[in-house]
Image 1 (tube, one colour):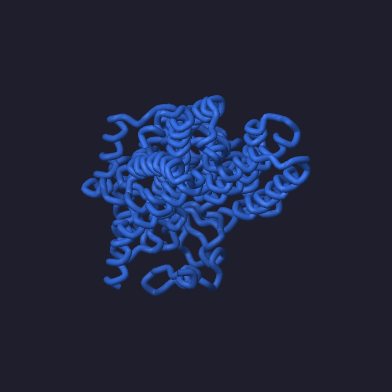
Image 2: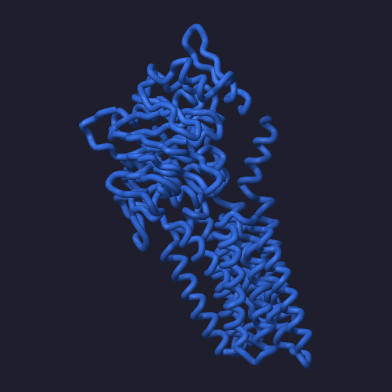
Amino acid sequence: MSDPREPIIRFDHASFGFPGLIALKDISLAIYEGEFIGIIGPNGSGKTTLCRAVLGLLAPVEGHLHIFDCACNELRCHHRAKIGYLPQKGVVDRNFPVTVLETVMMGRYGALGLFKRPGRKDRDIAQEALAQVGMDSHKDHSLGQLSGGQQQRVFIARALAQQPKVLILDEPTTGLDITAQHNVIELVQQLHDELKLTVLLITHDINMIRSRVDRLVLLKTRLFAAAPPAEVLKPEILHQVYGKDLVITEKDLVIVEDYHHHH
Amino acid sequence: MLDLLAYDFMQRSLLAAAMVGGLCSVIGVFVVLRGLAFVGAGTSHAAFAGVTLGYLMGWPPLLLAIVFGLATVWITGWVEERGRMKLDVSIGILYTTTMALAILFIGLMKSYNAEVYGYLFGSVLSVTPEELSVIGALTVLVLGLLLLFSKELYFIAFDQEMAEASGVPARQIFFLLLTLVALTVVVSLKTVGAILVFAMILIPASTAYQLTHSLATLTLYSATIGIFTSIAGVLISAFWDVPSGPAIVLLATTIFFIAVFFSPKRERRIRLLHSH
């Protein structure tokens, strides 16, 4: 894809994993500022690994990864505070004794650096982030008291409190009811539009994001496609990755059977 | 009772108990939230092995306690980070190994040494002025570092990977926490003893956990409970002539069960159960 803009994330023949267990192999991919990217692929295809690499939690074992102007060949990168991250649900202890505002304030800690205490400005940024996700009236509530969808909004607010350039969301709709799923995706779309954020969204629900994303990145250890949805969601491409677990219906809906088995 | 307070030894004991109670209960918040409870137990037994080696060889016991304590937490942290072994397994092995060493060192001593047992069971009423200054200095050091890095410590207790992903040097902060746990254990050895120090780290923080949903309030409640039970425990110990360590710990345990019973979280759980 030729683009006059400089990419903000660039994988250059990059592989990730451990010797003998490569999670992602020979990835070359450029992501541009302001793009909305959906990352799809079967379970274990390396979607989370790709995001962890962008976060600087994994260095490439081969090839190169550039984020902003930083070559991420080692783990101590200073760009992390500029990337907001919503980890997969279940990773976080949701009964932890913490209020909504305290949770969102944590988003300021990386950017503040060591030895500095959060001040009024950080509080204002956190409150604004809560307002952006529509949770400002819950700021003094316990995180554990909220519903799954509300908790996801709070975690998105925490990511926004970092004032990120890139927002990474790892299966943000898993475990939510259909209305909450729709609301979360709608919120992500709105944040992308209003804040001009570059968004990387991992999901199994291709149908929910196909009309919203600029490009779909299709992974199964290797990069199978990175193109607008209409070019990626073709039976011949999808069958290469999902095999017979995938059905494309007459209404052009993609049904990944693998997804249903696991949920 | 007021007569008792006029004695130097009593003033020293109360001061030592208050410092240790405050220190243990504040670090306990991070230990409980980060799920390091068993590390506290393992470290205290390792530190006790250091003390016994010190008495056996005629070396400074507290210094060796620090060395043993730090070695244990660092090895544990390193093993967890590498993902080689679960934390509870590695600390379990170190826990029993250091306890075996302690028993071996005691066995090798030519005569019975009452002071060694003081470190095992705690003897706050016999704290010397020198020991009090060591306790004071280490308390100030550990509390100072906890305060300095409190926001990072809260974050890694909540979610270490998330903290790392957002630019906090999470690994270093985790090792700092382990180091401070080891130092806290050593500071507390003389007061509550190797067996009971673990309780002083766990119980006030777990009690506070029942009572609040806020991190800041949790720390405040835990410190208040820790300091109160330590001072009250020493007074009970002096008054009724019972050992100080058990007096402090049993008082803390009583408050814990009262808190569990009146916990707003418990009421919420019951309401949730009934609503289903």
